[in-house]
Image 1: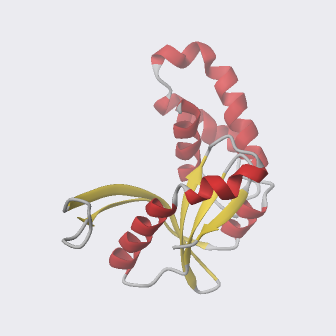
Image 2: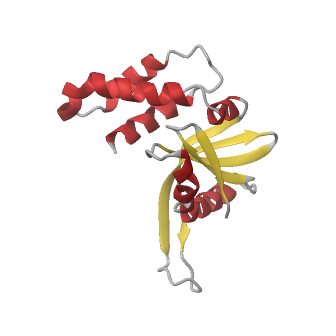
Length: 167
């Protein structure tokens, strides 16, 4: 879980499209700001692990797609109504944070990074478990941006695979 949080923080700082970006500087900033004292003895191992994950991601098709896109927002906080009188869920407010909103080929996309350890054969099954999250994030972007998103993608960072989730 710690690696996932640190990888997310690094992705938030990355500049897509800058192939000369010194990724080690991004990782150092994240570790300096966010690595808890009890994990400092493992700092080098954590740095290597994050560096490996991000280096592989930067060679992927998912990264190339983001480099060709216009990043509109990162870590977008939202609060919106949840549930309805028709639903079995109680009415209330949902709060969340959307990893990425971007425009590609004139279309608005919503994305969520996943740092899960999954094999390529497991990705489509794992993606299904995020369908409800995708539905809520799409609704939040629709309300916040005033535009219908083209779709939602899970970006499995370790494998560099972006998977659309059908709503």
